Length: 138
Image (cartoon, rainbow, N blue to C red; front, side, top):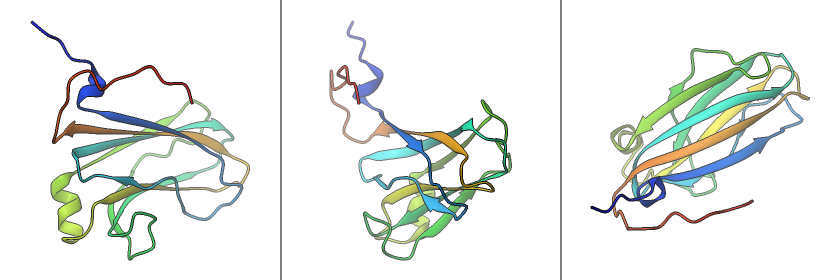
């Protein structure tokens, strides 16, 4: 019996989000072509102001098209250590438009000096491969 690592069918990307602004800002666009869903977590690391957390899809890999709102968080991770999750799937992305395959979290904070981490977990790879997971330090 062969047990594969989580990296064989999932991709995890972590961001240090420090916008120095209060406007709704894209965290990072990722390609969803090869994945069935994405789970995004925001976690407050500095500050206590209100947070707005949304997920958008776009046909442009840098968000330069016309982003379409897919999900909005109803929780407000305002205190250090608080977090919120949003998940969208391939059906929701496809409903945005035939050419839509890129997804990004959009986050704003009420105080520009607040900071957080944002994690993307893309799951259920359409083309799973054995032993794709490698140790990585960024």
